[in-house]
Length: 231
Image (cartoon, rainbow, N blue to C red; front, side, top):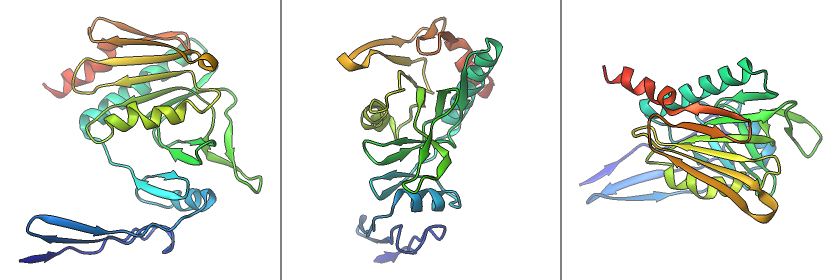
C-alpha cells in the first residue's frame, strides 16, 4: 500500500526561498524530495518577522527549529527569570534576552536562536549591507545559556558552541540538562590562546558561578520548578 502525505508548504516565506517537500511512505520507508534555494540574510530577517515558526539561517539556507517539551521550557524560563532578578538587584550593566532574539555569526553568515542571552549595555545589532540596523538580531553576547534536550543536545555542545566562539564578546557558555541535575559552564578565560575553564555541577546544593557577569546561580532554584511539576 502506498500512502500519500500532503506536501508541506511554509506560506510565510516567499515561494523561492523555502523548500518544497513531498513525503512518500511505502513499506515503512520515507523518501523526501527537497529543494532549498538560497536567500539573503535580509530576506531571511524580513520573512522571519512574519513567520509562524522559527528557523535558523546558515549561509543562505534555512533549518526548522524544533520546539522543546514542557521541562525544557520550564527550566529555560526559570533561568531567564533568575538571571534577570540577579542582574537587576545588583544593578549589573547587562540585559537578559529570551529565545526570541537571534544572534548572528558574521564569520559564518549564520543566525541562531539561543535559549537565553546576556549582553552588555549598549547592545550591538546586526547591520544589513545597506546600513540598516536590525534590532531583531544581536552580535554581542557575553553569556549564552542553552537548555539541552534530545533533538539539539549534540548541536548545542558542538557546532553551535563553535559558532558562539567566533564572536569577540562571547565569554561564557552555560549548558543545563532539564531532566536531571546537571549544569556545565565553559568560561573563555583567554580566548586568544584557547584557554577555557570548564566545570560540571551535579549536586543540587551547588551554586554555579558565572565568571563573565560575576554572579552565582543556585541549582536548587533552577530545578525547583520540576518539583512543582511532579506534585
